[in-house]
Image 1 (cartoon, rainbow, N blue to C red):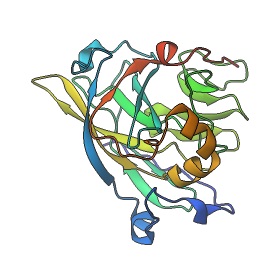
Image 2: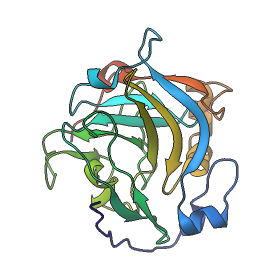
Image 3: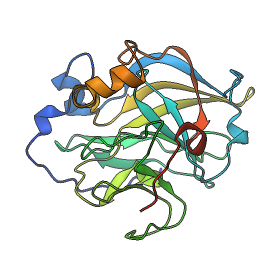
Length: 235
């Protein structure tokens, strides 16, 4: 199994890496997967999403593990191996790589690990770029326009450039080969949900309502980013 090490940097604020519902030192020290209620990924009609129907290198969005926390779903178009990364406080973990018939499908929290920029229905300053952005370092990265943090989704969303101090939190998917379905069941890595809810409390209450902090259970709707968001910004 191909596992490469990522040298993360440590900076002030590591204590702020909390999981919604309470920070647990033991979990942070080992960076084990954090299980949440299982959610089947479905299309906009409510039908189970077929993994093989995803268009390669296209941005898809669903919400997990909470009603207001967006996730990027990507078919990178090639097999993706496991990769070793670490959180801002140097808690190492092994991201398991892609799932699906070609092991090419990955999912990461769409909340930037620097200033918590995220895609809304009106605008998105963060997204996967098939080809390099104006200030990009290579093709095929998740790029945040706020201060140009860039993450490699083929390597556990490790940070390649910019001010972000840790990878995007991974969302773990289970692929059922016979039905060709995908189910989200856990996160892995540095969660930033508490900070996210504190920073955007007012906006989320307006956009999502009182259910913003509710756990997603049962199913989660997947949409293309261009259908979810009116203005995906390219920078």
